[in-house]
Length: 346
Image 1 (spheres, rainbow, N blue to C red):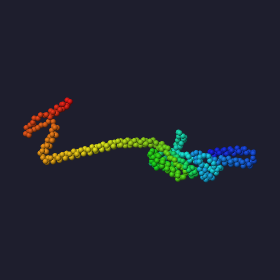
Image 2 (cartoon, rainbow, N blue to C red):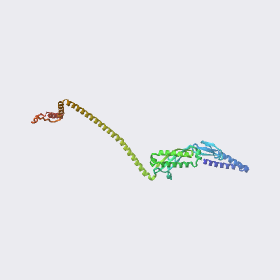
Image 3 (cartoon, one colour):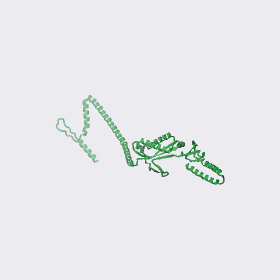
């Protein structure tokens, strides 16, 4: 806007000189001065009655120092000679403030510079560690009149408040949260608190976003911090492996334990049933023995001999007088040997 006014002033002076040269010698001096003044007034009125508002701008119009209204994008008329003054504010563009770095060359291959900005990016965390933080604050002008006239140097105010809020929020967090896990949460907290403070200042600004561009430890401790990160990653990997082995071995052990318990319970039931059967059998034998002891005793003897004798290799029978063993043919041993021979031959 200032460049446009400067061009208009230069054009006005050129027109005045041209008109003055034309009028020299044709009129009397008094009339010449009067006509020159009229020409100056006409030209000045013509060049100070128009102004243009760009597509991303809003014009704030003051009439005799008092707020008159807003003007939309396009060509507009205003009262000349400074009666109406127009301030153009970029309300349609998302503005940004950079902290800890500056954009040197925007475009497809954007380049940044941190030269001389080390103190701006160094921030103390709650556990007394230092972090190198680069962040961006993006905002829009919601009320152009408040932005221009409510406070002096609004851009510097936004920068100062943003830096104070970031240092406060980061100062209440530990270095691990700032560098790794809680960056998005911290950025959201900074955005909310920054908006609340600017609303209290009533400067007509809406915060679009607060984003951490880069968060790293300072250069002197980067190597040590990387080693710590590697150790943390190795720790997490070992914990993961241990959990994986735990999830594999514990269910297996529980299954084996359950199987062993079931086998033990089955064996216990079997032994109990067997014992109860033996007890019932013994009671039945006892009942029969009481009825006829001699018969029951003989039957038990014979049943026992039937069970024992087949297990013996040879049997010797002695008479009661003890004169010597009776001659017995080893029929059973020969039969067994013959059976083995036949079995081996087949």
